[in-house]
Length: 347
Ligand code: CP3
Image (cartoon, rainbow, N blue to C red; front, side, top):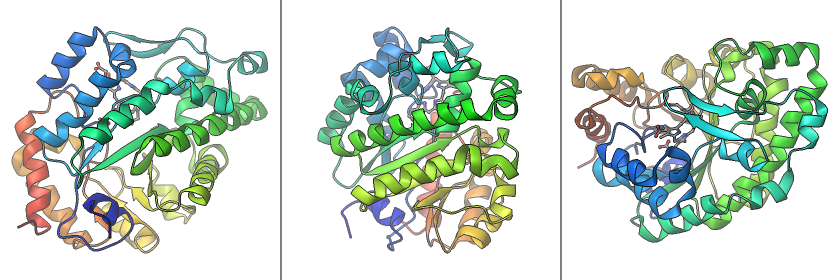
């Protein structure tokens, strides 16, 4: 046993109650976050400032009562440090001015350990958080999945249709695989350096998994994440890895899930009972309340009780089935966390 409930739960050990955290818990629904972001000037400055990034990482632990902090950063700092030009346009989200179109575009990017070494502000943030985080709370480090990162690198921004990267998937799959392989190499070193800086748990976000047809998901995304997990597990077997692929019930149903992960993050569109039936023996399951239930305390309690009924307080971590939205009342987020602890037996 460790002194961290969250790490114990990730490793399948029994815990006094089911730990809880929320994806995107450090963010705009907290007025305290908005104040620190305003001081930083903008979102990227905040990511680049370890003191401030540390402060906003700790806010949800102190204010909402979650059992783990997630380091404050963004998945897109990876392609940014590989040499792409990232900006966050107000109201429009992330943008790269120089999306990847050709092999020459890819060749210009920095790869491997050299790119990972440039993310010093992330490692400094982790070290600061570890100094300040209570001993019984865990620190989660994270990365985007190579596929999810590649969608931004190829489209240059968020997309509803994924037409540019899917054109590459079918018209020039070799180039897409080269992009994915290069990102995978950087991510391996990036996560290794996060571990060396002090994170307790890794989470891989494949937020745009559902853009790939289920029969192609392994080839263009899953196998790269398995490669990352194998690399990390060979060196750091004690560090749990949480895999969160959003929107893959068909992939789960057809039995495609394999790999050296400890925890499977269940998104809100996948029935928890299905996940339990198909994956519950192999993985600890994390999730999966529909995040917009947070607008109503009653709807929240109803869902937390239902999830508890299915999971029975075993091999489970409470979370939302995707990120918390900016206009959720803080009080309701606190209610969610308190309810998870109540139903799972916190005295
Ligand atoms: O609390 C945490 O979870 C830690 C911080 C975190 C952020 N982004 C901060 C952020 C994490 C884990 C992420 C991951 C991330 N970033 C993902 C995967 C997670 C998911 O929700 O699926 C993705 C797809 C991104 C890319 C990204 N970054 C987008 C699409 C946006 C704009 C979305 C929006 O809500 O405006 C961001 C910006 C971003 N990343 C914000 C935060 C707090 C909002 C920036 C701000 O205005 O302050």
